[in-house]
Image (tube, rainbow, N blue to C red; front, side, top):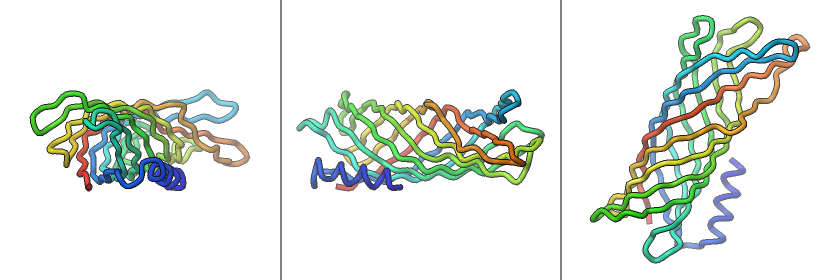
Length: 202
């Protein structure tokens, strides 16, 4: 949250009152792995799928008179379910708090709409929650996740955006847990696809 507030303040100082504010939501499908490791044991990795709904908000700014090249920052909260394939586990809860920065290029006018691409960087916390265990591991994780972002955006009448986004993980990590004197590392991370909607407020 501090990271997002600092970004918002910095962006406002640079670009003043010409910002466009937005809010929206999205559906996210994830293709993650849950990796479990202790110091003296080989790493075990289990495939998973996740499905979540998110809400987001932020500010965007274009730097030319034709609204061709711009940037934005946003924050997002998501909540959903994951299905880690570990010891018969069926469902686990999934939550995330993320902040992101994108560069945007709206390059193709389509009447009252504009088609564009965007890409950037995202960082935050991805939390897997479950009451079940595997060996000595609790099947839960708090993973500090960074992602590269790339997507396609359709701006409709300068007021709404429909977006398709792919996120690729970059060096995810988690703080170790101490269980019976042994440190455990549990990382839940993988690529994500999302489709979303944003409404712009002038």
